[in-house]
Image (cartoon, rainbow, N blue to C red; front, side):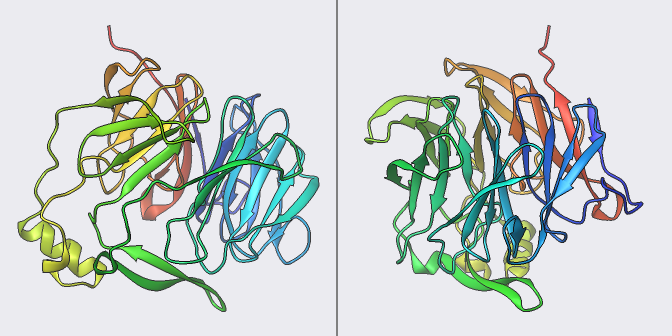
Amino acid sequence: MLRIGSTDGTCDAFGQVYSLAVDGDGRIYVADRPANEIRVFTPEGDCLRSFGRSGEGPGEFGWLVGIAWQPPGYLWAIDGLRSRAAVFDPVGTVLATHRLQLGQVASVPWPLRVDTGGGLHIWLPGSGPGPGTIVEYGTGPELDSLASVPQPAIPADPRMRYTGEIGEGDNRMAMEFVIPYAPRVQWTVNPAGNIWQARTSAFAIHETTRAGDTLRTIQLHREAPRLEGRERDSIAADAGIAAHRLPERKHAIETISTGPDGWVWVDTERVATVGWDVFDERGYYVGRVVPPVPIEKWPFPVFGAGTVTAVTLGELDVPYVVQLRVVRGG
């Protein structure tokens, strides 16, 4: 339906897109990392405005790592370097700035979700070796905590992790990396505010309440493929680790996403997405949805009611924002 991007240095020339958001009127918000800037586009792809920049003041960022739209009119933005969240109105006016307990942990893009009731869900890392928490906040520019739940996770195994640094120049942060295909739990918050979670080793996704009760499970009888041969050696070399440290099998599930219609989108590829296995709001398997171009996993695609807004890479890895319409088969 839509393609936004260029190489001519204007508003739609992106350096690196870290996060996306779409508001109720269809306007598209793009968080551009090198500029620490949020750019706003009409539903037709025309540039409306931009706001934010590098700096320490209100509405400025050290490291813009995530944005999310919260009805009726709030855009939340996470500064991973300065450990804070800023909330803007639709024209870019700063309404409030809040300190967050992020510590020295980075996540790109930052996990934050909004449910259909307007609740804002932000992942906050733990102060120790634990996985952290998912905190729910109310609607509005004030960051009022309503509830929290531990992040679904497999107990940490130091053999499956290593630490490195990311960032630019003096703005660098320590980040913990997980060995490719190490077992983990993938999760997201669905429109009802519940949590979809799944171990990557099996194609079974569980909807759980914040109290930990399982409401339902959706699954496919599909075994995770083996990781072997040249592919195994290549992945180990890219990660800078010995091949024997890699698991014997790949993941059955890589990412889980949901849209406001309750559909669940499951990606099974480690590299760019070439297709999703999709379940409807009842948990019935709809089929496989194949985009016309490879879709980047990060930033997280934004799934609407019948649309997908995401990033694809063009020539020389130039990022473009695309909006796709889901077409049902006959």
